[in-house]
Length: 265
Image 1 (spheres, rainbow, N blue to C red):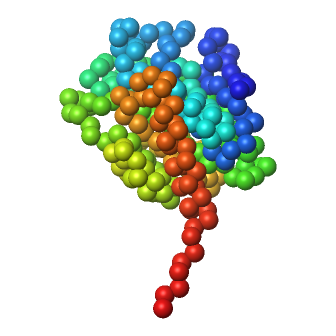
Image 2 (image 1 turned 90 degrees about the horizontal axis):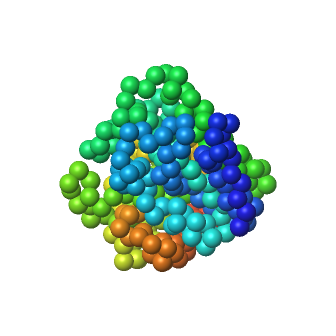
Image 3 (image 1 turned 90 degrees about the vertical axis):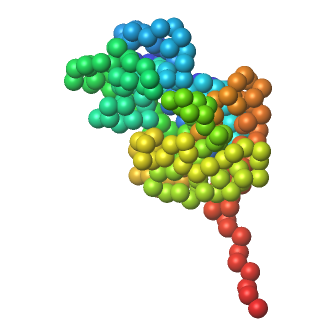
């Protein structure tokens, strides 16, 4: 597998890495919350080591699942290299959530009272390179055909503000629900509690990448959210990918080559 890290001009850590860019499959996998790194020049934002490892800083298990899924689908993978608390790549620059001052019950001191210059610096160092790399990959594949399909991979915490979540697999859409609904139909045959637009939906401002990258190009797209207790360890991540890959392939086939309607007597 080849990887092309794209570095900021300021520091060594890659804010975006493209793995296996020449893969032959239709899907492009994206993992915006893959890392919990807090590199210079931003530092730890005033967070403890425990907070930097918690779900507020990243999506635990998501990168392992995304890599296993990309391998199963022969797909390229685009993933982030810094914590979403430094910049949440699934939020637009004008959003308060792009550099959140609070996450769940936690304050993020390093994001409190950010100046316009500080917000611009992070946007230029993290957001713009990440989305430029993803856009370039999608555009190159669209130019040579067939059209790529964008799937973003995330995980969510089993307990939110003290409330347990029963849903295990959330399938989320932005403007076009077609692929999401097809994936849900396939997921219903699994052991997972799969639901459409849970635990989040576009109304929660979680589909920015889909709206920015896929919709303007007319690409099929879907956001995949897994409860992170189901992704603990490489074995669980590979097992989930092995279950999910054929569901995605069948879902895409079902909407591009639907079964013909039987004539009624």
